[in-house]
Figure 1 (cartoon, rainbow, N blue to C red):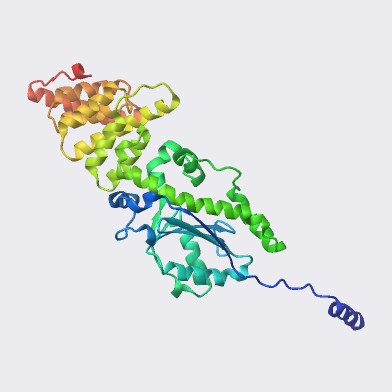
Figure 2: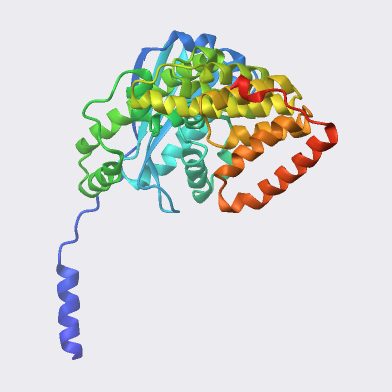
Amino acid sequence: MPSSLMRKLNAMREGAPKPAARPSRPLIVRTHAEAADARLYSLPPAALRRLGYTGAAFHPERALFLDTETTGLAGAGTVAFLVGVGFVSNGVLTVRQYLMPDYAAEDELIDRLAELFTKFDTIVHFNGCTFDMPLLKGRFILRRRESDWKELVQLDLLKAARRAWKLRLGSCRLSSLEERILGYPREDDIPGAEIPARYFEAVKTGDLSGLEDVLRHNLQDIVTLTTLLCVLAETYAEPEKAADRIDLFSLGKDLERQGELKQARRLYHLAAVPRAVATAADLKGEKYAGEANLRLFHLYRRQGEWEKAEETLLSMLRRRQMGRVPSLELCKLYEHRLKRPGDALKLAENLLKDCPADERAALEHRVERLKRKVRESGGNDHGIHGKL
């Protein structure tokens, strides 16, 4: 390009008016207050431990309820543009929302959070162990503020909710729990997938009015966390009061995992109690009644309570639960623990009649071994079929 033409183009660029830079705006802080759920002041310590709380004595006024709204779901560029926190004092729940009007406000957001975290011992969230807390900590690190980050004892309500209700509900999204557990479905709530686009548009135009729905959504999340904590604590304080047998089974599994075997046995018993089957939900409940009986059998076997183990398996056979499993387990029990090879042989021969090809060789070997044991013992038939 001729140098004269280049000089003219440069002169035109220099003379063109430059767009005015939008001045950065300070962090926006919204505050909302309402009566706190009174149950927060009497949460049973044993229930909190079952929920997954690992700290010292829980005090509601030392707990921070947190939820974030972000520009995406993952990646180094993801930013929490709105952080909502709730805290309780003298029976009042205060929700404070920190909104970044643009990215330049992140340093101020980090200042506020760093100061806030020093005032609490515990942080309660929903999937925060996986998402919110690692994201916020990452932003502290990227802003070279890692030394200002304070690790708090975390209580993730999503984990507890899934253990208690996922088998029955399927979805344990917060909105689903509000509707099906807490009993108040949301109305006119913004879909979570739309939230990042709302923020990008607000930053681009400087018009924050489109974020009002996001602020309401975040506020409701915080309030719901406080109620959900109370309901989960009640559920885990007295799990035997669960109305649905699937929940009884789920809670039994969870307490068994935590080593509370006596309580787990009680819950499995309650889940396995026969009930009328009139609906699809009843049929699903009956399936988990079989699962509960099977886990009950395994607990009896682990603790050497062979007669109770036998009765549980016989009950499963009478109710046609879990297919071939109870017959095979009862066969093993009679052969190896109760020393009744005759009864074990009858079960093994029955199982052999419709045996899958991949199990046939092992079962034929068992039948031959049992025949030999019966001959050696001179016969041993305790009339198992009379019990079914």
